[in-house]
Amino acid sequence: MDLSSSSSRSWRFQVFPSFHGADVRVSFLSHLRKQFERNGIIMFNDQEIQRSQIIKPELTRAIQESRILIVVLSQSYASSSWCLNELVEILKCKETAGQIVMTIFYKVDPSDVRKQIGKFGEAFKKTCEGRTQAEIQSWTPFNFI
Image 1 (cartoon, rainbow, N blue to C red):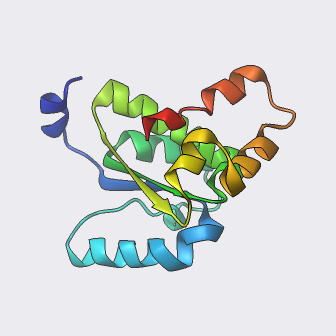
Image 2: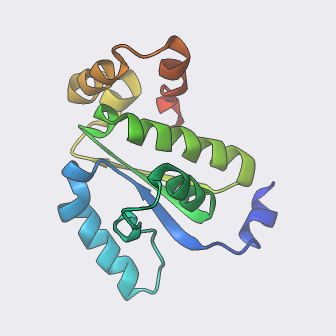
């Protein structure tokens, strides 16, 4: 789908944030969410997922149904296979549905992310331990930055 047909599509959410909760949920993300709410921008909120629901399908659906996908890269983002799998889905949606992907570097240097060095790189290497080569390969899309 090209960008022009993507922009005429009806989106369930205007924004989907991908983030490592411990790093940004109560600081940066809460401020961003409040500002979006003040401006009438609908942001997906993972806190609204009922505990009895299976989370992964709901998150995948929310990514697919959001116009703008914001990736908040922090030092611990790569310590979560959940975050890395979200990033894979986000980049797939960018390619197939023309969604807009925005990257925010929160207390992490962009070159550390690109080169997978520093605390970000250490977290990534630790997450990769014991994983298959195919899984690790799918998690290395940091050249999109």
